[in-house]
Length: 507
Ligand code: SF4
Image (cartoon, rainbow, N blue to C red; front, side):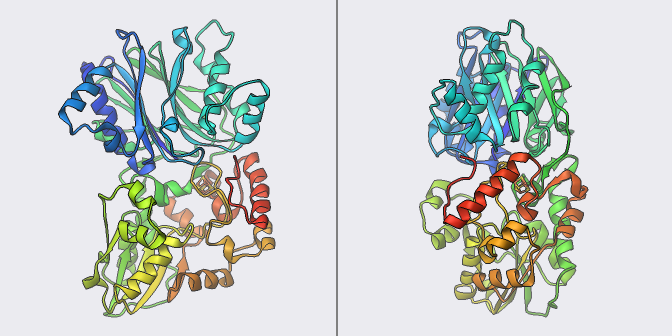
């Protein structure tokens, strides 16, 4: 996944020392997109180090520590500049090490060939491209698609005597299969933000009072005062330099494939993606889910949304069901991610959520989840709501259809074995992409120990998002991948499933 950001202050009248603070605020609004690492690269033509990067492991606050006065002054002065890019990381490729924190830098003596960039997406043909580079005697320092991307971008400038950014980036669709949004800055002070030709991941841009910015989340633009943002179209890039910016087409869009999971779970609830509000979609998904309801509410019934992402769907579902939506689970917003990751499954859930026993005791709980991926969180929640919360019944309702296939485009679910739904299916059903049936539903319900389980249907999801099916990627639901490598990797994932392997399919 990850989140990217870019900003140009030239022509805005703002001071160079404001740059770090603005990038920091933008990254905070993208924190939902990755907490493994955070970083920025800024440009200042007065510095010897024209582009300079500050990055580290952890959440934005852990990395920047701006609440410490001395640290704030040191960072804002050292990285002061007129332009910059930012990144937050979530790993779908590579390990959790500060060596993998972005932006990545490719140094070169010529300023227009010296660049830094941040990447949001996942390269599906990573393994093949890695072999190709190694065959060309490249030495790769890390095992990540971002390094591959860096070398291929650099290759486009090789031997070239002129600065042709559109020409350089227009080669990417020939090389890469997958999803790749990029924010790039070079030592000439040129920014490029680019959305891949399927528009798989969101990318918004806008300007206000002479300041230009772009980001994975429109909420990032709102937080720095850009109220109106626009979606960069699939296959488009923006070049921002001096005090202006220009939108250019670098690739043809053969087919849009916006990731449905962005609206369902991943994106900031305050953002808009391609003109459609994330909160609005989640609210509509709850209404669609209620259309499938078979149970009736009684005076003892409550609806509990799993915080925070399922909250809007839970609220609208409750309204339709005629039962109150209550906070039976309280999210602990302050526990560090690394601390949670070190715990066992049950501890992880308890670290993340506190059970509100006075709300749950003796109730028929309709637990609304945004999605069931591995199923471990939902299963633990059901068990604990019953055993500790003393609820009478727990009925699980899911605002996304069953996740039945891996994702090769940037969500960390790249094997079949880790998913709840395939583990309730036969190999033949998986390979033939057979429809999800009552038999599968019952198998998952039993594993969850839920009193009943209802998933959103595909039509309900499509209605909720409000875009035509043809413009959405729903490969993890139906096994129909929008790119050729998606189909190839599914074959490999099925082989791994047969062999009981959990290795990432694209590595
Ligand atoms: S496979 Fe699923 S999670 Fe991955 S991009 Fe497509 S819709 Fe999104």
